[in-house]
Image 1 (cartoon, rainbow, N blue to C red):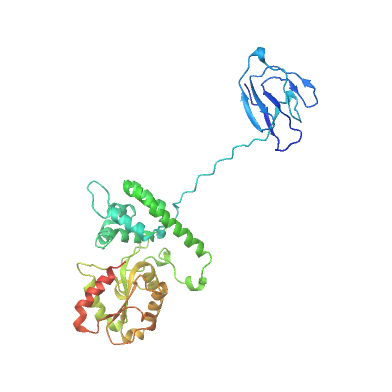
Image 2 (cartoon, one colour):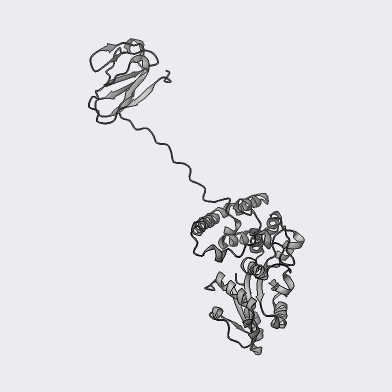
Amino acid sequence: MNYNDLTVQLHLPGDAKRDSGKVFLSSGTKSVEAADGKTSTSTSSSSSLSQAGNDNSCTFEPPVSASEKPTTASLGPLGQDSDSGCFELMAAELPEKGDKDEESKIDLLMPATGIGWRTTNMLSQYLRPPRPGSSDWRDLAEEMGFSYQLHIQNFAMETDPVAKVLSAWCTKPGSNVGKLLDILEKIERHDVLDALPTFLEEDCKRWRRTQAEAKDPIQVPEVTGNFATSTSEDLRGITLNDSPSGPPEMFDAYICFAMADLEFVQELRRQLESEPHNFKLCIDQRDLLPGGSHALVTAEIIKNRCNKMLVVLSPEFLQSSSCDFQTKFAVSLEPGARRRRIIPILIKPCEPPLIIRHITTCDFTKQDLRPWLWDRLRKAMSIR
């Protein structure tokens, strides 16, 4: 039976002229008895749709033989001419279209800087332990573009090399969640790919919320816009081992001190950069390249390239405008000191600046306590 020419018309419930009867569907002509009693005849019907009474129900009747074919059918009001192929049905509900598939909860274009510490910790647990016949964090770093001689060997000396790799990779232009997943697929760490979505969904949710809040910033652009992030081309190649086209050099801590205290800083370097801790410190006179704005460069180092800042307190420190700026800038990044980012070290009797007076100080003025203080300082440096 050909239904291509059929047109369905709907009656709204409550039509006063609605009558009971049968509507015979046919690909040919048909007989219709209209409300006024007039009859028009038609031929054959291979199946029929009957409308019973006023109960708004519609049922299909089985095909009938040629000898049993009806010649008339009772049709409600507004009966249509048989040749038009247009039939009326009582009020019937059409199925609604299904809902669209829910959007993916993972935003593949989310910058890698949006990856949270829980995700980083999970990646570290999977990729740090060596597994025979399986890729590890070194393969991840190599696919991210890091050189074995220049970078991966240095990463291997870190307490958490995976966190260091991700921290350095995040500063590369174009690094995002999609590329991270592609790299994990390339090194065939499918176990990581199976565990990662749950963590990334939370990271993406938090990142979207942060983006929404950023549309209505608390601070005016004049305050937050003075210092570019590490992705800025202007802040590439500012340290001795920086590559203008490669990843920026990262440090465990920046040392804020006055030149009069350089002798203590040399001892500090020997204690912290030696085995077994191998902390990497940023010292202006040793690591920063000349030629750039000192305020801009040190702000970049403190904000984006160091986990900690060691503040060497002395009367000379209090007289230094550069030290004053660096200390205030570091405090502005973390006013409550919840991450213990600033570590004051008192080496000469003086009153610490008011802005950091609430932070616990390592008092190196007591010579007999120095062996204990070095251990405390190393422990504080290890906290992420």
